[in-house]
Image (cartoon, rainbow, N blue to C red; front, top):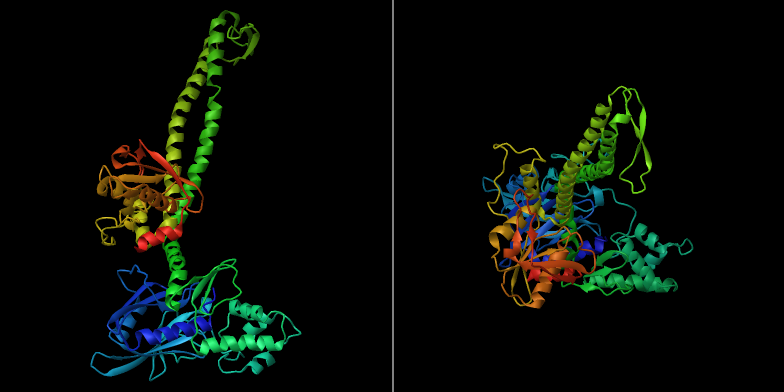
Length: 568
């Protein structure tokens, strides 16, 4: 994912044009790797995201909404102390590195003007974000603390002097000419794309491969020309932000002419980055928040699957119950032929049409009557166990379906949905309940996702069991249309229309299929019926319903359609 120095340059220039000068009005820290600033500039509020996530490190303007903790972290509190109401005076990139300085001016408690520098360093797992006293040059605090034991070159702790990361022997591609570019490359050594990355700052492997592709098998002059064209685009800001579907999704602000697939073009670097990272970063946040839930649910699912296997083995063992009944009856009918001490008896099997001989094993220490009773007891025990086990099998199957559903819900969960799933597991006894003192205030009603069909009809979706139950049993009118994937874990979907068009039903079915375990499958069956035909059995687990009078449509889930309907 090439958030390289060139992309950082494009975003920095966009921020200079968009939010300078700007006033910081709000500061939030949704996670331990993300900061969100609301900046008021030119009569408009802008949301600025700064992320030092080890995989998704970036900075850009965003339209995303973030779930903020009720108690802000200490670093967020410090930023609010120093930067609330601050004016962003300048935003500058250090060379072509992925290091950006946000210089701000604010007033302290006694009204004196203070100057701070917020530094964003994007270096993979070593990314960091620091607040510096610009006049004194020391660190006020950082998102990640790095002591001498971890890094001897520089300490990143409150009070320490700020030092830039060690610079490698690389050249800034904006400060050289084409001849210098050629001189830095060894054309006899090969692997020119790797040489470009090693010798020049800001150029990712993705762009280095593009330079090599543009030059083709040409001479050194072809490489010189390809570099000078890239340099010129950066200097005049000739950007074409786009996402490319290669072997994996890639993005860049420089047009990739070697791309095979058609590109998705965006109006600005920030909109491109927002589209590329939004879902990925949110899924990662949810994955971190729900890590313990996923492990718990997965363990419970495995435990029930093992239990089901044992139940089926018990059923197999109980299949011979009738055999013991037959042995008991044959022994009773031939009691006169048996005496205590016999180890077996040969009798005529009158159950067999051919009246064959059958040998019945006996316990020599028991009387004939006790032997017969022993066979009847074994018959009764297996018969009773089979009835009990069949009930247990149905219960275990229900539990497996329940945990399978929860796994699917975690996959589709947003930031707010995880806590509702956690609360449900507490209510079901799988997690320890919170004490009243620790319990956080939570919304009285679940929040449902809302979509809009092409004809304007509202479509509501529940993404976990609490939301599903609330939607189906509380919100939906009895004559509205209810949808669910057929025999597949998924969300409850309701069309807020008593007589929706066929197109609306298909659009709602697409949403139901997309928010299901079969979101990546083709031709997914989706049942739909009126809400009045949907019932919750007594004692059923949350979100479990039965329904009748359904019809079925088949759709292939489309993420683009679902997102387009939500955007509307």
